[in-house]
Length: 58
Ligand SMILES: [Zn+2]
Image (cartoon, rainbow, N blue to C red; front, side, top):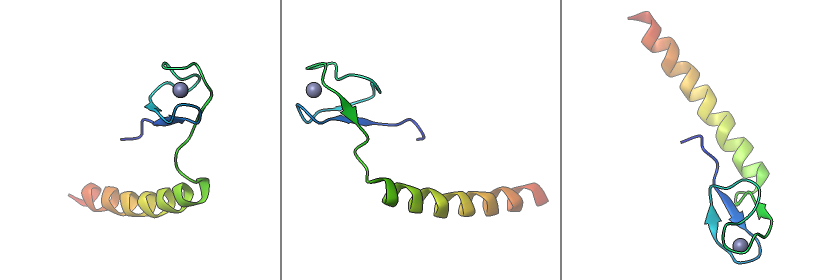
């Protein structure tokens, strides 16, 4: 789930290509606002770290 999805600003298509759009060769951008993404990842990493600790106890 860590694989990034990109979004073509030109033809509004989602793509896994991180450089150019396969449709129109336009520039691709990250579809999520950076701030939202960082907040989410921070929360997720705390949660994941806690899970890993729990698992290591066993
Ligand atoms: Zn495009």
